[in-house]
Length: 326
Image (tube, rainbow, N blue to C red):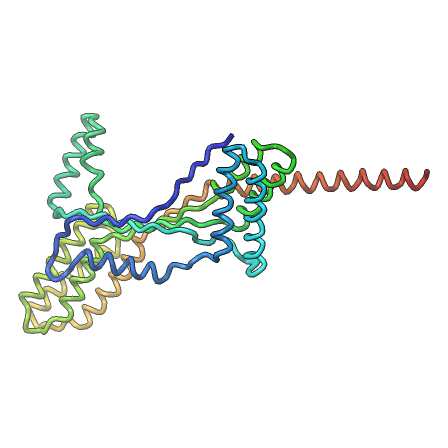
């Protein structure tokens, strides 16, 4: 029997001790991002959720050799999927679960650089495990992981399982249900917290009265430190155009603050640069291998069924002709 390689997605919010830079609270920024994500998250139709639940139940029944219960669950699952697809035949990838996980690293850019230098030294000495232990905590981000059900694949695999079970092939039925579950697609988006912090600090500075030059300068210096942390943590590169533009813009604003203090347009430009950089660094990683494999299997199954139907049709026609002659 095939192994089910997916695991249940559970919600985990991990907040460590938070270092505050000026007026910026990283916890608040991360919670705001979570709230935005929750607001934009689309809930799957209840029929799809019920269908999946019955599929999971069928797998348990098959594992315990409860064939009749498994048949009942698979029939119920197919009925639920059919209802959802009749309501919207264009259903494809539908999000069915979501996980939000926050990682917090409170060290400065100097702390990060020291860890990286030591990590490189350990790797050169082939002390790989120590290097991994040293580098792995260097995360300051919000991870958003969603699990989608491919409605062009999953229900077909469930039907395949029911057909196999009706023929008495329990192993094939179990494998087909496993194929259905392994066709689920996982999307992961990474939102770098230091970039959110840097953006927030610049916005705070832009709201200050022109007379508060010293306070504005401190906020901008903190923003540069946050940008440096983002670069050292690998969320952006110092040679990237967006990163270079932001650094130049902050330096230009600091210069203007000390001089004529004509910075309104410069602030507008830097806000646009931040939006561009943050958009580019929202890494979306898609696990599509399982879906591709599942689609191939489903297509193969459908072709076999078509060939079988044609063969049976020819046999029927032959028998009918012979009966007519008689």
